[in-house]
Length: 302
Ligand SMILES: Nc1nc2c(ncn2[C@@H]2O[C@H](COP(=O)(O)OP(=O)(O)OP(=O)(O)O)[C@@H](O)[C@H]2O)c(=O)[nH]1
Ligand SMILES: [Mg+2]
Image (tube, rainbow, N blue to C red):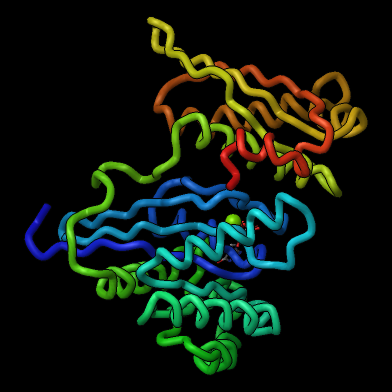
């Protein structure tokens, strides 16, 4: 660890679906957090680690669930996660969907951040106006509105999808985190245990390939990861849904849907494990797992 290194936690806050997870992946340069067109894709706080050895800086990006009014035990735990993670952050990164502009939801979150600043003392609040690729010059009024949000110190236009503006944002963040040693080994890009990361990759594929109420009812558990002598990885996982009808939809005609999910997930998992993978997926019904406190504990959603 070089002398004079900098390292710190950056908590990403923003409404559901603004692109927080995509932005974390763009800064880290690897798929550490799943993203999808569905709001409330992220359920747990996930840390992505981006180390710049040359500059001697490390950002620990805390990808948080989108902030909204709690509806059930799952969403209320998600909300509490956001508040407690922000309390421990060195920098707050407020992410806004540039395409939609600044709205009441964003103002509500800016106020939450101001509250966190009052508690933490001196928490910088940086704003990323995302989805710049969709906006062209129309982004200017959004940048102005973002700069006028209470508490916002700096505003950056970015596209998490194309990478435009991301290096500028990342190096600015790296310049304001505290001086100190790296918090994670520089070769790491995530703090998640392997089982959780693979489960999320599978859930990501299930989200992309289902509609209506199904995405919110899906949870995934990886029950086995093993590497055979010839190098092939054997991964066993369960996909949970909440009813028999959801199970039928997820399996699909002649297993077509679950086959599709498996094929997509296998590619993502191969990218992560760096070798050929055999993935065994089982669809199971766990009624009301979203309301079951014990179940949420076991899933590590606190
Ligand atoms: N055009 C465009 N789309 C983007 C950009 N960033 C994210 N998206 C898309 O926006 C959708 C939501 O992205 P996520 O990263 O899952 O959003 P999130 O804020 O993490 O959402 P939650 O976890 O549900 O709060 C996905 O379909 C992304 O592909 C961007 O810069 N440009
Ligand atoms: Mg997310």
